Structure formats: C-alpha cells, structure tokens
Image (cartoon, rainbow, N blue to C red; front, side):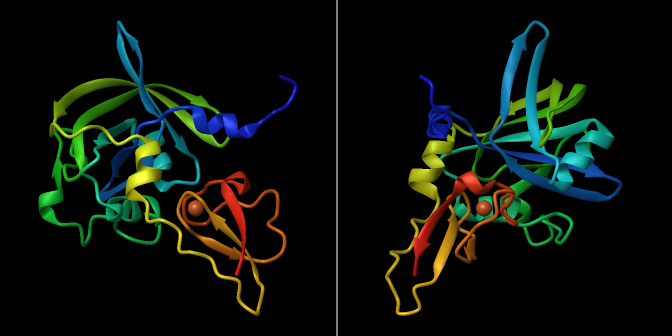
Length: 212
Ligand code: FE
C-alpha cells in the first residue's frame, strides 16, 4: 500500500446535517457531513465546519448551534437552500416555509422538514483543523422528529442529487470541470490546483473533467 489512492476517502461513511446558528438577529445554517458522537460519558458530539462558511464564524463566536439530522425524505431543495448559497448573500430562512423549521430553546432555528432528529449544542472545545474548525459540543437538548431513515452521503449521491445531464460532444469541444458534489461547472482546459468550488466549497479533487 504505497499509493495515496484518494478514492479511499469515498469509502468513509457520513451522515448529512443542517447546522444552524444565530448571531444578533441573523439566523443562518449550512450543510455539513461531519457531525458525530465522539464520547458517551460525558456525551459529546463533534461537528467540523468549513471556515469559508458564515455559519462557521457564527458558531465560533456564539458557541451555540443546532444540528438537524437530514433524513431520506429530504428534498434536493433543502441542500440547495443550505448548501449551495452563502448566508453572506442571502437570508436562507426568508422564503423558507414556516412549516419547515422551528425555534429551539436557545433561540436558534432548526429544520424540521426532511429531518429526523435535532440536537441543540453548546460548544465545549474548539480545535483549529486548517480548512475546518472542529467543534466539540455538549448536547443540551435533543429530540426525534420523524421515523424516516437518516440520509447518508452515499444515499444523497445516489438518490437525492439530480443525475448529471448526459454530456454530448458539441462542435465547440469545450472542456468543462463539473463539481461532483453540487454540479457547478467551470469552463477551461485547466482547473487550478487550489480551486475551491464557489458554491459548495469542495476542492479540485471533487471535480470531474467532461467535454461538451
Ligand atoms: Fe461544488
């Protein structure tokens, strides 16, 4: 095993979550695949959030967040709303159906539509991990929201994310790099090594080269 076959990374299993936070009057949230229980006594839940996300800064500064566990009943629009746009540009809750979220005791909204459980978390420790900050949190409230199965990252890829359109070769023969996470397309022969998807913040490794 001398090689670094990065495809091995895709064999790790993940759930998917909406992490919400509130700072001042601003309510915001993002999609993350990195929430998990890390210890049972004391009970601690970790969540790693990409520093590029506004939600990251809000959790870092307030020490509070809610984690809604996304279920298999979730619609792709949930991922678009919380994952494919930034809270710096839009109010993600402004046109969100009032029946799709509630307010927790901590004052932070949490998503109830397409989710099966929710945790209110209080940050206990933070660890700077470079691209992400790892938040080690104490759950202060938790509730089951539905009996639907949890949505794994694999389930999302196979069943919720729209299949890429068939790519035909056109006379223009443009090289396009498509983000396999969110579908964002970058046109150009070369994708810079340090390229970060402007929509979902994933790196070059998550892009596939196609020709149109
Ligand atoms: Fe992307």
